[in-house]
Length: 58
Image 1 (tube, rainbow, N blue to C red):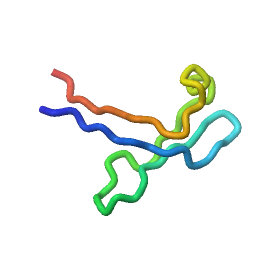
Image 2: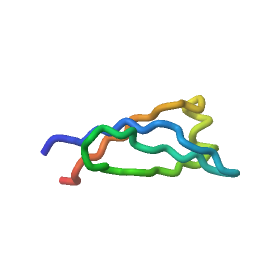
Image 3: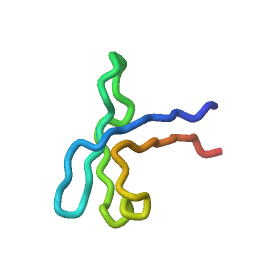
Image 4: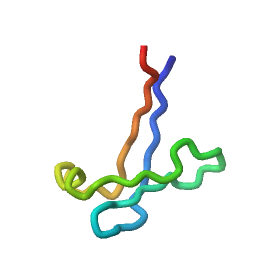
């Protein structure tokens, strides 16, 4: 089974989280919206876009 890789773009910031969303591509969304804690994003230098890879457990 091949992993699924999704690019997400920063959409909105709240007090403790940053919301990332999938850009519209004409295909159904896989993740849609993802909230990440700000403390974790600081370790990644607060990116505007992130990549999420989903793999099935074996």
